[in-house]
Amino acid sequence: HDYLVYSGFELFIYRREETNQTFTLHQQLGIVEYSIITLDKDILVIGGESQTHIFSEQNGYWGETITLDQSYLLYQLSGRNLLTTSVNDVYSFSIEGCAPM
Image 1: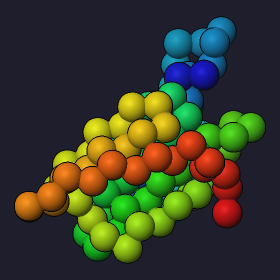
Image 2: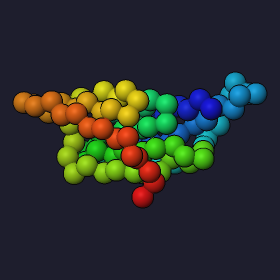
Image 3: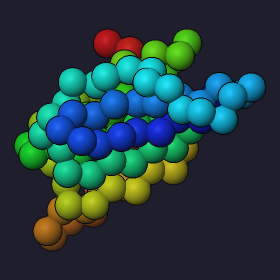
Image 4: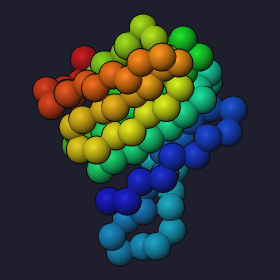
């Protein structure tokens, strides 16, 4: 499936089926305070005002797997590796073991 994350007042995930080119509403995430979104295959990272939310897609459902009690300026996601930057530092996280909470 192809996924599209729509950011209005809240975050919504739309999914495009293999046989249809139209995106349909798939899931509402319920996060309203966010600044940065990055998506790579089955991992979704949302930088909030004071937290970072990491979601993983399993069996068609996006579940929050990790919450970091800090927000960062920039996010780069590549597979199971997350690179973040703050004002003075760069951090690397391996999120290989992501599983729904």
